Image (cartoon, rainbow, N blue to C red; front, side, top):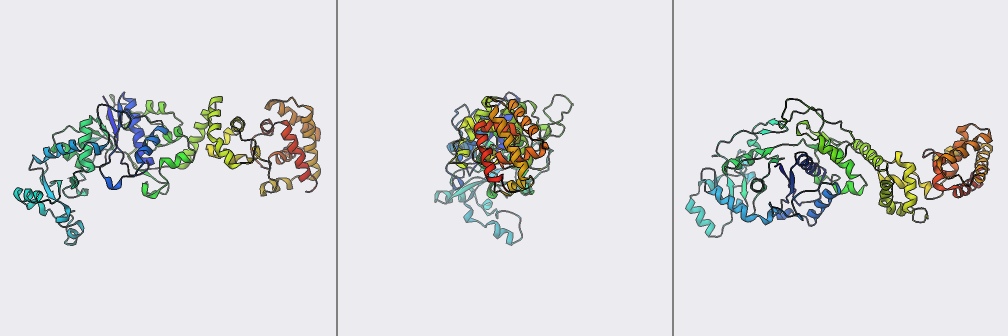
Amino acid sequence: MVLLRFAPSPTGALHLGGLRTALYNHLFAKKHGGKWILRIEDTDATRYVPGAVDGIRSALAWAGLSYDFGPGLDGPHGPYFQSERLDLYHSYTRRLLEVESSNSVNLHPSQHSTHSQVMHIGSNSTYDKACLHLTEEEVARRVRAGEKSIVRLNDNNLPKRVPTQDIVFGSLRDAHASLPTDPVLLKSDLFPTYHLASVVDDYEMGITHEWLPSLPLHLDLYTCLSLEPPQFAHLPILLNSDGSKMSKRKGDVAVLDFMRRGWEPEAMVNWLALAGWGQPSRSSLADSATTSQGPDSTAVLTLSELIEQFDLGALTQRRHVLDQAKLEYLNKHHLMRSWQSDEGTAFHAHRVHDIVKAAFPSSQFTTPHYIAKVIHVLQGRITNVNDVPGLAPFFYIDPDYATPEALFMRKSISVDDYSRSLDATIHHLEAKPDACNVSDLGIVVHDACDATGLKQKVFMTAVRHAISAMKTGPSIPEIIDVLGIDRTISRLKAALLVNGTTN
């Protein structure tokens, strides 16, 4: 069975790159009838951030990514915190130490030259390897005397390993030169480094596929331990809009920030899934030689549709810039999908109720039922639910005729034309108090326009100015339908008093 793992460190909030990795775990596992694990890599206590694990779990739940095993979901692979698996790592460390040609016990780094000291004498090594010249008796004596020790992998004497293919990138060049000299496996505090813990856990948990940047070292460890490695797949790096690499330290990439700003989880998942996905498939997992074209980067897809179409072979090898405009486009269209039902509109009305109430604390027109009516007429204009208060404030409070936009609209209409337009509209609305839908109100407004003998543009501008003080927005019948006839008439009469006597 396909089994994947998402293994974040609890060093801060989950960021977009991490969410995409979790998403690809979810898509691939569900596509192939498998499962995925949430494993918390908390072996570095100095970087632990309280509340980080809860934040990661909340972000995954918000995005609709339900892991099969992990914190809160016990299973056959637990425990799911690496800090609770130390005995297992020590067992594998002893196994490594039994192979003298592949590794050795070295003293605590403070007992030998530092990286900067070694560089000073012209060496590229990350330490001076002096500990390798100690006899086993000397090492044992120092350890018994209380000196802290660490375990390193001796990169001078590694067994030959079989080259591996990356599912996304194919054959990769050997990157050993970029690794630290004799990488540390077990630290002086008896906690494993990421590398040892990751290899041991992936093997013990039965992980079949892995997203991994430290491939050469991990393959060495698999070889030294005589373990069968999983299949590996590297992901193309995500970049900020300015081309810089995404980083927690730079901020504004945390999933929590996007949650707070009102983005839809379905749109976020859609956006991240297509980040770097879309070229013809070359998947080594395919049973046939045929290729498939990935979806367009703005294809509006649900999570189930993404699962159905997901293909590792359609991932690009290029770094990918996250385009905020694409998120806006996808968010708008996912919202429009949800508003096709009354239940969806009502859900979002309750969701933004507090935002609207905070924006207009003195308004009596901020009930969820009323907001749902506003959303219904604004839905084609809403990109983000947080836009709801600012798109049409006139639905909640009286129009502001002193804004530059309102003053410009009023200046284009003569006093006589303005008064005639509003008087006719008041008269026809009072004559049709039972007009109860947009269609009936459209007839009323059309008849009022005909009665004035004015050009439609002049009439509509005057009425729109009076009831909204904004150039754009829903149609006038739609605005009247939300405001109600009595409230509209009251607003038209007030506008005559304020704007009907001067140009």
